[in-house]
Image (cartoon, rainbow over all chains, first blue to last red; front, top):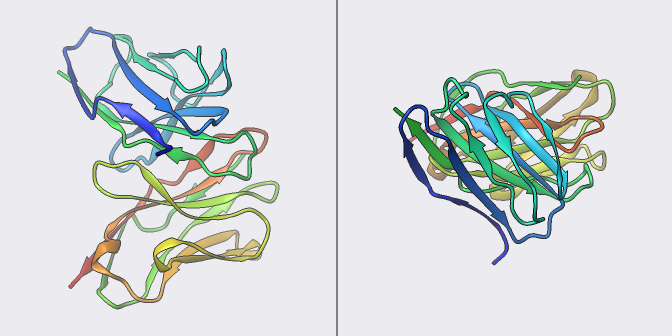
Length: 113
Length: 113
């Protein structure tokens, strides 16, 4: 089945540690995205990538980093510089044409204590 | 710049009653508009999309939305609510010149038996 996978579903880390969230898609989509979701704030864009080896900052990129070495993979690293990292993180992908919708993964809930 | 406003963070309806979830957008050019649904601790699933074809768009699970340029609205409706419709609903607009979406803050729908 085609789709987007995110792992793990739940992640717990101590403050000061970097953590990497996985996102893989087998839809052959060109573009991939990372969003952060907090209660009452909807989804906010962290980073996006329209092609391999290229990515752009979204609205809240500070304290995060990404890479896009392969078309199907777009891992997100939450660094110790992110002041409030506890949140639900969603990865998405889409065709490059603006008419097409984004497909979302099941999300990773990160808790940092 | 594009933006989306969802009026009402919480909406409650009785089972069998009409569902109306409001979305207004601001855009300097004709937008691409989307409605997504999110069940607890899951990713987002596309309900329907407007891409400048028919103004009345039919989606999955009996939902539909009407694009009204004069009112800059894209409200989501369903004639008869089911218990399974209880979820959070997000309206989104595609940003001009980019593939990323701008999301509203969401409306949580409760269906009362």
